[in-house]
Amino acid sequence: MGTYLLLLHKLIHQNKWRLVFIILLPFFLLLAIVPFVANTVEQSEVPIAWVADEETDMIQTLAKRIDEHPRILLFHLNEEEAYRAVSTQEVEAAFMLNPNFQDDITAGKIRDQIIWIRTENSVLDTFVKEKVAAEVMRFTLNSKAANDLAELTRNSSEEQWQTAFEHSDSYWEPEPLFQMEFVSSRNEAEQPLRENAIDDQLAAGLFGFWIWYAWIIFAIQLLVLDQWKQKGLFIRLQVTSGSLKGFYGRFYLLNIIFSVLILVAICMLTTLKLPISEGPWIVNSFWILLAACLLTILLRQVLWKRNVFLMVGIVYSLSSYLIGVLTMVSDSEHWWQQFLPHVWFYQLF
Amino acid sequence: MILLDQVGKEIKKKHILKSVSTQINQGESIGIVGPNGAGKSTFIKLIATIIKPDTGRILYKGNPIEKSVKAFRKQVGYIPQDIALFEDFTVKEQLSFWKSAVQLSVSDDYVQNMMASLDLHSVEHQKVKELSGGWKRKVNVCVGMLHNPDILLLDEPTAGVDLAAKDDLIQWLTSLHHAGKTLLIISHDWDVINRLCEKAMVFQQGELIFHDQLDRLNDIEQNLRLDHNHQELVKILKQRMN
Image 1 (spheres, rainbow over the protein chains, first blue to last red):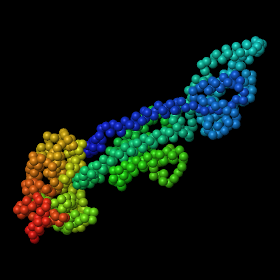
Image 2: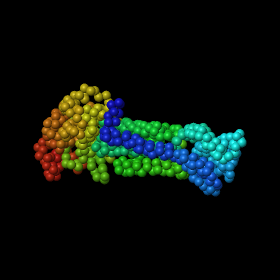
Image 3: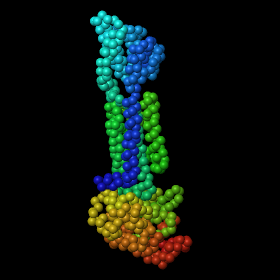
């Protein structure tokens, strides 16, 4: 049995260069997309609307400091535009400053100075809120220090106030109140989310692609059967061993194992290299590939002509992947989609 | 041992075999001759259970072979005309693979003896695709004999081989025949038929027109080698059979 499987394995993978190509291609593809996806995630900015009726020095400085943060993209809008942008999710949230904001802060009034507008879908705006609050608090405490000094010295000159303000401000470098790492965590009932995790749909699309790759490799591996049949090897096998069932069984088993190993390896590497949210990605991919392989074997039994089988196999697997992605994105449901393995994959999540 | 009772086969609405009735006894060595398209290969394939007859029946030791095809196949060694081998295997791997595929307990001694008889040890580490036609043919025959069958069905076993290889093959097949194996050999090479067979079957347009001792055919040996003289040959053979 061992000899038989080893030799059958050698027969299937007789072209060593093809074998190396099959194994290495997905790894190269992954390495190629890692910088792209990682950069996309790391450098993604949180769009925020900034509404300020007055343009004082303090407000301009405040906006500038917030906008300087690499993760925040500030849009200066009016109130109406801000509400609309939040509702259409063009921005994560809007921060609307009260009229007389500078005077109130300078006077030490910190209550109800900023209106925070957000929706249920807003996630990362909490991070911006911390930044806004920290910067406002910086102005507030500096003003408080200058005000207290003026009261204690009974000197209300603008020059002393400004000096005290700047002296207090010097203690805020480098941003002592905003040195915490931003880590988001949700309730257990919700989808788990790692910091910088790529979108689940993007991850599902990526895993769907690996399933398609392993699936098409499996289909291509079956083409050799056609060559063997034409050479009369099956007739000989049939006469020599009495039946072809054992041969087919082992041949399909070896090919399934090969495709599954490729899929599992590349999926594991994907989860290691990319910030993917936790979930049964690999297990689900395995089951879907197994089902796809069994469907392909059935297809092979019906379509013995090499070119017809290859064409139908490619069209079927590509349709499965593309329609599966569209189904996932659009949430549309049609009965015929149930014939596509990728649709099952996306339904599992 | 093997009885064919009015066996007929039609492929693509063409009668390849027309109601053939004959008997093959154990230990016989029969040469099967006739022009191309006469039905010789189909006749062999029917006995090898590769194809099924449309009419008639084939009995093995009194029992219809379709009732125990798997068991019957273990008694049959089929050596096709085409080289049906995995070309990327070495000779040794080739034999190991087919030995495993047979799923029978084949002794290593038997395989070693067979390889020695055909001088295959000298090329056992070479890939089949690197071998000459003669060596390939030897390996082809060797694979068909791996399970030590009682009945050997050989379709042009010496086609395209050099004289030395042909000699080796004939000697080895002769030894098998002397050991009691039943041989059915299709060949266009009259030398092979003469040296290996004691009986002959002649097919013409799907009909078995002669099945008798080979020496009865010797006087018209020349005719068998000349395709243009087949009409005359058929007349003579039909007269002899009557």
